[in-house]
Each structure stands twice: as structure tokens, then as C-alpha cells.
Amino acid sequence: MGVSSLRFLFIREKGAGFEWAADGPSATPLNPPTKVEGTKNPNPVHEFQQGKPVPFFFFRCTHSYFFPFKSGCIMAYTTPAMKDRLGQTFRRDSWWATPSAMFLVFTGFVIYATIAAIVNPAAGPDRYYYDLDGAHFLSPFYSPNFHEMFPGVAAFRYFPAFWVVWLPIAFRVTCYYGRKAYYRSILLNPAGCAVGKGTDRGYKGETAFPWVINNLHRYFFYLIVLLVLFHWKHFYDAFHFEGGFGMSIGSLVVAADTILLTLYVASCHSFRHLLGGNVDCFSCAKAGHLRYEGWKGVSWLNQFHNFFFWASLIAVGFADFYIRMIAMGKCADVRFF
Image (cartoon, rainbow, N blue to C red; front, side, top):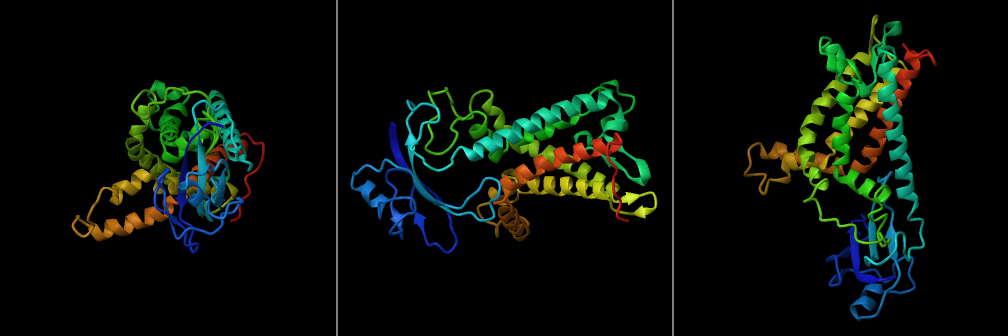
């Protein structure tokens, strides 16, 4: 395997006391471990600094793309050269499992959402709106319901979901974590650390089309906040029946979709930057203390951003599926009170 350099990746592990000073061949360890799990070398960093080859992948890592609650990783990996064939690697772990799972979720959701957006409106609103037994459930694919808001506009009468779903698609595709997810699972560029990606594909960063569109993420964020507000309106409707306050399985499904979407948007890097990422001195800025506390809260949420990405994606798909099933009479919505 052609190796261009050895790099060190650090994600803090609480209580471990490990820290790396840099990323690259000049990296020096601060309080280095005497032995790194997965290696036969008591100090591979020292061996590398002495000019000795370290042609293997070694790591200590508990980070997960889907369940990041226990994270912490000290990782040294060889960077594959451009001549490495696609998928070529010295790694012995199941590096392919995560991108494979992400690929299945991505493609499954895209296929389902496309079919639902085309078939549902063709059969009428009875496929995406449920208002029996005093309940009011609207599929998130149709929130806001432009056809109901502007009944005189013919354009909203056909495929109303497409007037809505373009925004969450744009927000997710340009999302910082979303880019990493589909770069690895769909584009395989690369599929993982120290995994060959084949020949050079002419990637020029985010300065050329279509990747330059990623720079619009912060503007999609402003628009997605409006979409979240509509979701909370439907959240309110889901718990208010004709007899007053109530709750059913449908209410919980709508609530899960709304809460997870809110957490995904609230943990966004753009929101963190908006609150305080561009502030050099909080005590000097207007409403500095309030912004600092908000920035700290979003920073804490941000560490779970990847989990909220997948959880909200699955929740919105299931919410549409459940509401469609009860609207078509395929199953009954169980009301608790």
C-alpha cells in the first residue's frame, strides 16, 4: 500500500490523559501512552519519529457514528496514496460496517420518500392526513400543507410534498456531518480512514460545482427553523382532540418526529456559530453572557449531532408511514386518553 504520511487523529477521552500536539508527520505526543491497543509496538510514535516505518493501523477508539454517547479516540493511521485501489487498506477491523449501514439507510429512505411523495397526493389527502376520532395528524412530508393554505394556487395541488421536502434535503445534504456520511457511504471518497479511494477524482474542495453549494448551508438553516415551527404547530394539534387534550400512538409518533428534528437543527454547527462562534470576546459583545450560555448549550448538543441526524431521518420516515397507514385504514390508532 502506498503511504504518503502518518497522521494522528485525537478526540478527547475523558480521564485517559492522552493528548497529541499536532496532526501530521511532525506530531509529538504529550503524556503519550506506553502501549496503544491493537499494536505490538510499545510506542509507535517514537518509532515513527526515529524514521522507522509503522505500516499498520493502530487505534483506541469508542466513537460511533450512530451512538456517540461514549466517545473518545486516539487514532494513528496511514494515509493512502492516490494510486491505492478502491477499498485497499491494512485495517483489520470491520471498517466497512458503518458506511454500509449508512448506505442502506440513505438509499432506503430516498426510495421510500420518493414513492410516498408521488403516490400519496395522487390518491388525495386521505393518504397523508388523518382526522378521524377527533385526531389531527399531518404527515411531516406535507408540513406546511401549502395546498390547504393556498387552495387557489394550482401549483400546490400537484405533488405538494415536493414543495416541502426540497428544504430538509438541501439542509441535510449540505450539513457538515451529512457530507461526511454520504462522502463515505455513497461516494466512497474515501470509505474510511486509511482506506484507498482509487484514482484522483478531481476533487477541488468546495470551490467548484456542485460542492460549492455546501456553502449555502447556513442559509438553509434559517429556512429550516421556519419548518421546525410548523412541526411544533402539528405537535400541538396531535395532542388536541375534539374532546380536548388527549394522547394516542399517533401523538407520540408526531412528537418523536418534532423533537428529534428540533434537536438535529438545534445542534447544527451553523446555529453554534450564529450564537457565539464568531465572537472573540463574549464579555465585550452585546448580550454576551446570554450568548455564551446559549453557545455552551449548543456546543454540548453538537457532540450528538450525528445521532440526531440519523434519528430524525428515521423518525420523519416512520411518521409519514404510520400516518399513511392509519389514514388508509390499514391499522387503527390506539388512543390512551
